Image (cartoon, rainbow, N blue to C red):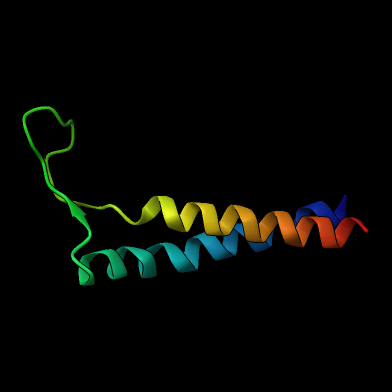
Length: 69
C-alpha cells in the first residue's frame, strides 16, 4: 500500500511541477488555440497539454511497473 501511495505522490509532484513549465513552453512556441465561434473557451489556451499528459502517464506507468517487479 505504501508503494502505491509513494507512486501516486511522484505522479502528483510531476504534474504540479511540470504543468506550469509546459504551459510556458506552449506560449513560447506559439502553440496556442485561439477562441472562435465554434469553440467554448474565451481566452487562448496552449495546445501542448495533451503531449505533456501522455508523457506523465507513460512515465508513471513505467515507474509503477518497475516498482511492482
